[in-house]
Image (cartoon, rainbow, N blue to C red; front, side, top):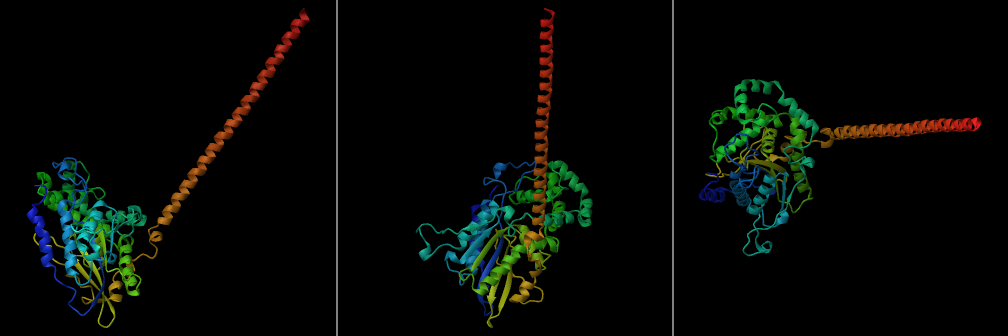
Length: 431
């Protein structure tokens, strides 16, 4: 069956409303700002392998796009957040700022979550039979996005990924699973030992299993081994402090910066900031806070960064995590993550010290974008210069050839004319 039963889909929404407890009143604090970093919901596979028995038509929304269940999941998340923060939020759209990576599934997921979180009331309701108000979703083009893109254009970051992918750990992992890699590669027609192809193939099989689609016996037999291989390879994407700084540090800087701006009174209206991202962002942020034993973030996994003013007027941060692995049964509610050397409400200076060293001072410079751009510009300049020289040489060569040709022609003409004159003189002499 391609899509889940309507009764199961609707139960997701009902359970999310009933299970969301008020977790913000455990201590005498004043909540000032919430920043949610949310992975997109369930989607179709990114691609289908060569011998995939499941046709693309099984995914009416398109490959890599949110499925119907993914949209329902996002809507349930929005309802959960509304229930959690019902005493903090109104329905004034000026309170919320929604950001997303430029991928379709994140943009749609962000829009659906915002629609559920900010259903209009009172003056914000502009149609009696429409329980929706427009909430803009902001994004940057992928090649300019250093905050939420899963593949930011950072040359040094890409070099670091390549270095780690060829580390002894990964080479040993590849040797350990050599037979599986060969058999699966031969069957699917794609070399999954190269680059990160194993991640993409595993993703396809995982989704097809989730939707009870056909999995060939050979691939089904290797699924758990492929999963083991994938889990280690996935961590390469955020496996060093350099990668955390270059690929995820800008997002951390924005989280910290929003807290600072809120405290300084620069964003008085803003109460809730939502960023829709990818699984690797959630995994990387968990690693930043030293939660390294967490399983891969499931669909709609969410980190909540809260800024609180304590009773003594000091500022504190609190971190919560929602990682429901069985949303059909119960979406659950976020649980508090206790940071090292911190209580639940961690003094803000201590809270931000956990990641301050990972925030780039000059991202473009640290990524060597300027160097790459400079080298590119130098290459272009050199190419243009060489082209100009070649054209100039060709041009002057033509002039030289033309001059030489004209000179030769003139010499031939003079010789011919002199010979012609000589012939006439001879004729006249002999007469």
